[in-house]
Length: 188
Image (cartoon, rainbow, N blue to C red; front, top):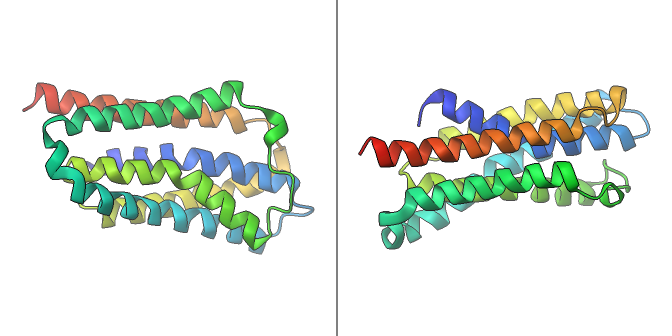
């Protein structure tokens, strides 16, 4: 997997965390650097951990699905991207998290929820024989930086961009799925 593909993957995966970081910045009484760092650390850590967990699970299942793994990767990434786009357009605004975004339990829950798609991507990466450590670290770092910016943006600008960025993230994931499928079908 190329460096650019990993960077785009990290950016696509981080859009959920970015949107939630913006919402956290909006709901926090006053966003300080330590608050933004805490949010970014949680999101970045889980966004790095979940692909490793998914990769490990997918690695053991790979021998059973090698003949159609490219289709599975395409379907998983398209589903995740499509879900992100759907939720950005038709998601229920009343379901936004209204409790304290700096509470450790709330942060843990939000970090897990925003990194489920990274788990599926980890499974996908195991199917296409990608070593997981470098992509997971880069995804975590990208998510950390984007979440840090999101917490500040949320404190300043509110919900102006949140849903639009989720749509972009979804489109990036679908694009990567199409590329994996095209690489396998046309270049093997």
